Length: 108
Image 1 (cartoon, rainbow, N blue to C red):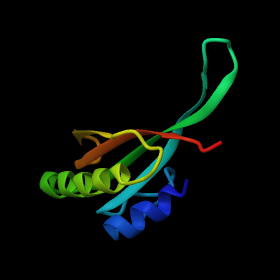
Image 2 (tube, rainbow, N blue to C red):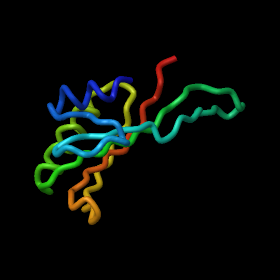
Image 3 (tube, rainbow, N blue to C red):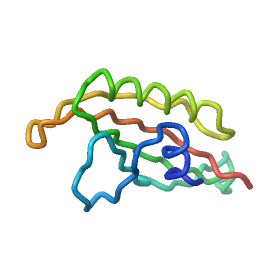
Image 4 (spheres, helix red, strand yellow):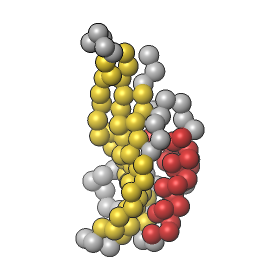
C-alpha cells in the first residue's frame, strides 16, 4: 500500500519524514503494527497492517478538513477499515495535529 502517494494525490500537501522539520501544512505517516489474523484452527488466514497518518496545520479547521478528505479517500480503498480521526493541539510546536488510524488487510 502506497500511503505517501495517497496523501499527496488526495491533499496536495508535502509528505515528510518523521525526522524532518515540519512545514505547514504537511503530513507524516508510519506503519504502527503488522499482525496476522487467525482462524479457529490456528491457521493464518490473512495479514493486516495498521497505519497512523498525522496532518500538521496551523489552523484547526484546515487540519480537520484535510483529515475528512483523506478519510473519505481511505474509505474508498479495498480492504481498508474505516479510519478514526482525532484532532489535538501540540503545545511544543504550537500547531494542530489531525491523526488518522486505519487498518489495511493484505490481499492473499
